[in-house]
Image (cartoon, rainbow, N blue to C red):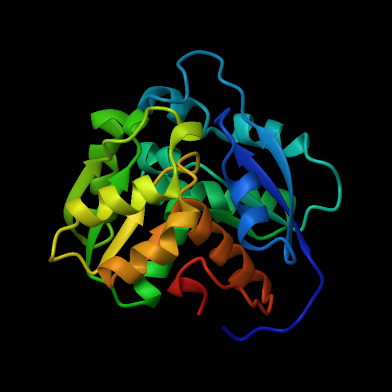
Amino acid sequence: MNTTSRPRITVGVLTPHAAAGADVEFSHIAPAYVRTEVSRIHPRSDPPTVPEGLRALATPAAINEAASALPGGVEALAYASTSSGYAIGYDAESALRERLRERWNVPVHATSLSAVSALRSHHVERISLVHPPWFGHSLNELGAEYFQSQGFEVVDARLADLPDDPDRIEPAMVVEWVSQHLSHRAEAVIIGGNGFRAARAINELEGRTGRLVLEANQVLLWSILKGAGVSVDIHGFGSLFD
């Protein structure tokens, strides 16, 4: 990255999910560089666990309402919902980002868009997708379609056979499951789901598999710091930050 040193950046995290995600993992990965403020987009009908509910929460009105609730001083916005990106698709997610940027006049980053950017920056063509069990088959399939629409070969897309509760998932569980189920054809692994909170599994998983590992909150943070030109010194969360 062409970067310059600067103080900590304040990021407004917008998410339709009740579970902790980017706000927790940003502080694990880069406490010296990022401070977060969180605003949750509240469901009015279908829950944010099914495609229809996620699409309803990705409307300009719903997102602007959540952004309006953030305190002053926010220097960037992060749309922290892998599944929402899958549900609305790449083009709509890109348009959402641009609307937010124009409305609030700050850089805007989204999880799934950030993953696409990271894959392209590393010249990756073949990927393996790993999603938490609570995504279900519909979102798992939409994830494969999302990356296929951008020209990637999705070697496989799987729901990890792990506890259906993010608070019960340990990094070692993620390392073991992914290592045992990873296709030899995949050049990179994407661990989707901002509530999955698998950032602490990245380093060991890259060491075990020899593949680039992109995790939802890690890649979103990478995009934010890269966009802000922040000079980072982050270790233990994957080669993406090298």
